[in-house]
Length: 356
Image (tube, rainbow, N blue to C red; front, side, top):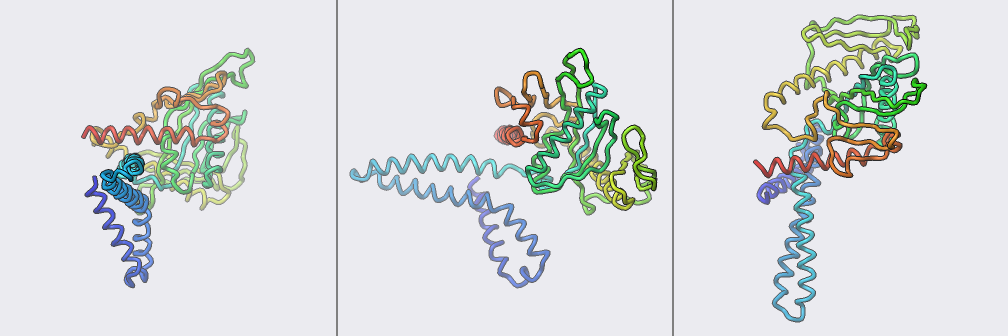
């Protein structure tokens, strides 16, 4: 590990020198590339240098142990340096874990009501509200692409873009089946009902990553409509794009502008096709690939929102760490839950690395 870290530090030093080179600071693209690489390597190099300083402190303390007058002080310094080295070594192992190449990407999220009828649609709406509040707390931008509302204010399905720093690194853990247990507003007898909604989280694909042949697209326009089929637009501004080779269909009617709806729909289509290709590649090397919390299968129940017991249980976690306050979570305070999933994911990857 130390040799690898020394190589990374040498590379970081080279990048620092590049910043003062005329051929670099005079080339905006090259300068951006150098700064991006330095930003990625910076935390690792900084931690490694702190580790080296702690090791020097340890060696210095060992040299003082033979002096009777300084022995007690040297033992204290030795214990402190050893503890610091162990802490930093743990940090370095985490920083050396392979990064998810999509971590800094924006995402396309899709929520669909599952079993449970109208109550499932109301729960899907609550999940969308939860993610909206979480995005606001993180300073992210959220934009609805399209939705299919019910007459009682629920949503059968809704898709939206989330843009900001580290969006995928946090929201990728939300993909799966979310289950709710509560007394529905539509239930007059007061019985607790179990309903579900599925959440799909897709990394937004850049055009350079995934190109679509215009000949493979069928683009239709139609009039936007609201809940219950009520017309909200008299012009044909809504867009339906069909990808003929795969049969994938994306609709967008959120904007009054046909151009804006088409742009949003293309973003969603590109992300879905990119995700399908990514899934195909991952399936081919599933046994050798990353170890993630749960299987990530969207058919897997990942979380239960139990309103009578005032708790949210994430089934990918264990012990007391799997339960969270439902009022906090449903109002967008997702960081404690996602932090626990990130730690579990890192622990799984460390275990997988140790077994190799």
